[in-house]
Image 1: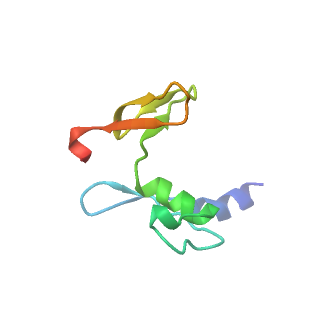
Image 2: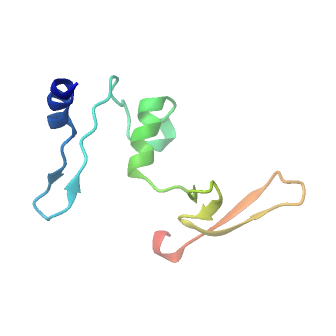
Length: 91
């Protein structure tokens, strides 16, 4: 068991970049074909875009919806129209 752990341990290392920030390297079995969120229609592309871009909202650890780049939002009475107000620093 320890031999197997010893073999896989080097594949899980963290590196530090030149500016002191951590670098995370991830290997996919299928490579992403686009980093454009408009074309992220499959799992590898969606995962890559989720790592690169912030959404309008985000879920917290209790799965509650919280603002991300949206400052707040309104939902129409018929619940068909959602209006998001963006933060000033992302406009």
